[in-house]
Image 1 (cartoon, rainbow, N blue to C red):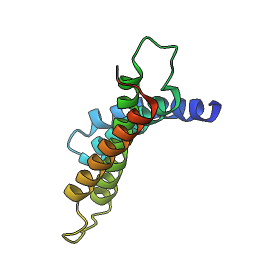
Image 2: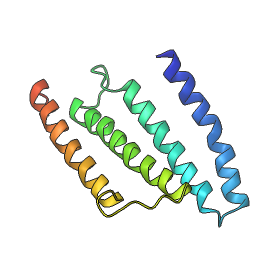
Image 3: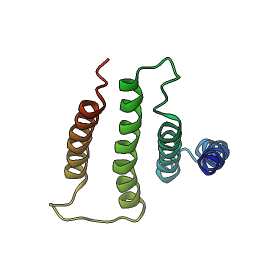
Image 4: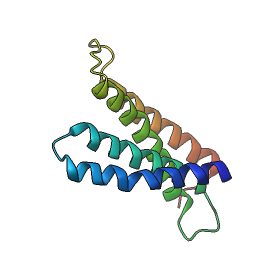
Length: 122
């Protein structure tokens, strides 16, 4: 838990630097992609480490939706970020649409399986 907390603090400290660099150079798409990646990692680390927690006034179903959604977003956006930054050209079978479809399907199947196993329906 301490390591995750330190990583979250480091990510929070990089946010103002990233925002200032976007204000200075607004036409640089690379800086915007980096900001989105940082926010995605921040949300993934936050939701993954502090949820699910039964002591919160938030239902377990909503907490699990936050956890899984941030994970799916990070997996998909990290692929997009790497492919855009390094100008990778993939063939027709390995493109972003197929990746997102696969991630969404695994999210739905994994989430339904987890909800069934835990009995959390409210």
